[in-house]
Image (tube, rainbow over all chains, first blue to last red; front, side, top):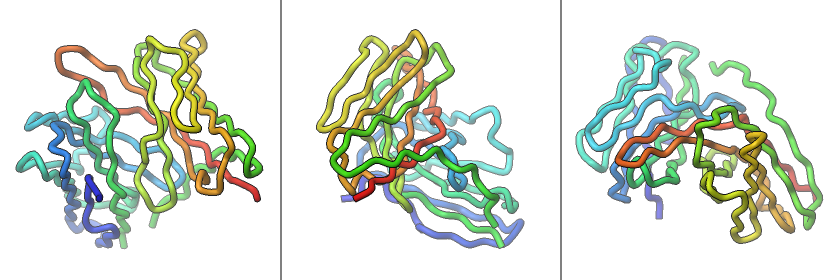
Length: 113
Length: 116
């Protein structure tokens, strides 16, 4: 059974049109992460939530924001997508900061028209 | 559309042979390392992990070796099977006691191809 669920699996949006990707987890983990993975590249951490505390990576563009309304759900908002934001977006969870490994969903592939 | 990505290093092995995938890391403060397997269209799947107080750890058909002196990590897969075809990533992080940890930093990845 899927434990980290990402919807939708494929998302198409227009240049500059805001888009939201969603992630839910059934593991009751405290930490949720968002990664960006471009074609043939490694995943790159954008930010993470430890419970309700938001932690942004220094080089994550301002265009990317996140919300975590409760333990189970986390959202990635891209305010004004550019062509360079086309990528796979991966959500991951871990039980807490000290306990790894992270468990990944199957990602949402975002295309920009 | 998507930008053209980098070509991943490729390792081609015969079915039944052993595979060794290597990874160099740069952060000497990293103390926790993970190997992930990623199949096409899927998220990374945990294979095995190791903490910096160990230099070897074995799982089912897999072994991870850690050499902290030269900051090198390897994944050995015994008796490689067609289902092992995937991209393999090493990842590193630093664990802090008392709450707090960095996110994972992934290596570049290696595409493992199994030949019949």
